[in-house]
Amino acid sequence: MRIGKYELLSELASGGMGTVHVSRQTGDGGFSRLVVVKRLHAHLANESEFRNMVRDEAMVASQIRHPNVVPVLDVVEHENEICLVMEYVPSVPLSVLIRAAKANGELLPAPVVSRIIGDVLGGLHAAHEVRDLSGNLLEVVHRDVSPQNVLVGVDGCARLIDFGIAKAAVRYARTKSGDLKGKISFMSPEQLQRKEVDRRADIFAAGALLFETLSGTPLFDGMDEGAILLGILMGKSRSLSAYGLPPEVDELVTKATEKDREERFATARLFEEALEATIPPASSHEVAAIVQRLCGTTIDERRELIRARVEESERRAFETVEATSYPSSATNPSTTTATKSSRRWPFLIAGSVATIAAFAFLSRATWGPRDIKASPNPSSESSSAAIEATRDASTNPPPTLSGSAPSATLPAPSASSEASAKISGVLRAPLPAQKGLKNGRRSGRTGSSSSSDLKTFPYAK
Ligand SMILES: Nc1ncnc2c1ncn2[C@@H]1O[C@H](COP(=O)(O)OP(=O)(O)OP(=O)(O)O)[C@@H](O)[C@H]1O
Ligand SMILES: [Mg+2]
Image (cartoon, rainbow, N blue to C red; front, top):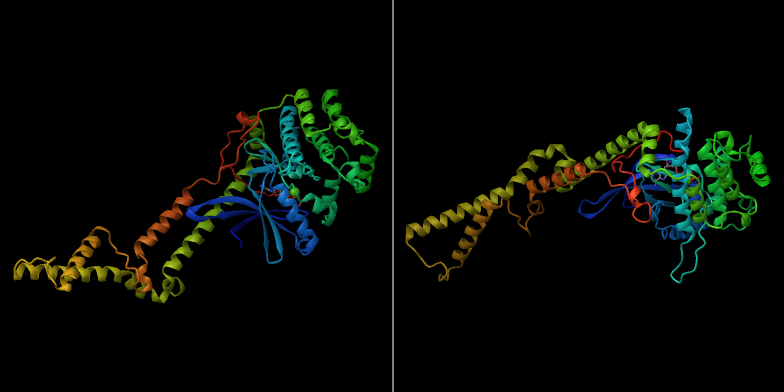
């Protein structure tokens, strides 16, 4: 299926807001890259206020440029649908990584956690600091910082997704009960009370995220949403000492998740600095190694799935090129013979021209030398042109006869070989490179995992 310039290849997951598809964007000159198209659920897309909100928020989100934030590339409105297009990140959600560690009977090493949450805080800070052209803060707040919305890349870099849609989601999404439970565990008291939120709501969520990533269990948990809600409103009561971590780490979580937001870290950057001072972070290479060790199979499966879908798509594109070049053979196999002969007729023309030229040449030899240029006879000129055409035909077969019958305008064999060269070039080309860290102090620490390490889902969340 195609939505605008995006070809949907495979569904990755279906969340509260929409269905996520890994897709292929193609352009001129063989341009091709993988993206994610999030098709927002129909019941949401039908609400015009929701659509406006998504459009506005996506515009703001597209201003955030940071290596730890997955950028929104495009918003597509298509037959009553509204879709967000994001960069595709070969990765696993943090929720999956935490679960995989638990299933393996281990916890993620504290330095690895420090690096992942440090990345998240770096991305959050960049978003919180986005300003308009006049320098005014746009007051961006993510509102849905949770393990599902953090992608840990095969390059060892963690990135936030879903910037810009949580506001609309909170207002509109009819989330399944289990999903809601997962989401409210990270919501600050003020968010739960539907008060105006600012960046400190994200800092609260990041504190709860730090606790869960270190311990493998939610900071605020309960039998149901009511119990979780009560826990949040009463304040943090669990300690990380049960997981062998020093009290300073506990203090970080306590400060980040204070009920009174005035008591929290004032900015994500301050939280990040405190975290890195308390737990020196691992390198992105170490994070990448953990991702590979715990989720390598899943990553390989997804990469294979995507590779197969891309090849399938290339094959279809190739068939379309063929069908466009030779419509009769594509639409009716019984006309194959006729088509073959029509492909041959440019050669026949060239052959005929060559015969005429040869005849002219022989006549000249037979009837004595003549000054062709001086000849007033126009047929001599055409003979000369014919000779030229013959030479061209022998050096560059077959000729392109513009202005002739449609099939003659197509350089039949070369169109086919050019198309197949283009297609096989794309097939051989590596899948789009994973965007690495470009700036800031982390740039030298980006993981070196292969950019083609794409991968599939069975789990997705
Ligand atoms: N840009 C992306 N690159 C790679 N995978 C992605 C990307 N965006 C989303 N995914 C995958 O799709 C899954 C679902 O994402 P999505 O944000 O739709 O669901 P959710 O966060 O669980 O729910 P919600 O719709 O409430 O945000 C993610 O957990 C991740 O596996
Ligand atoms: Mg999400």
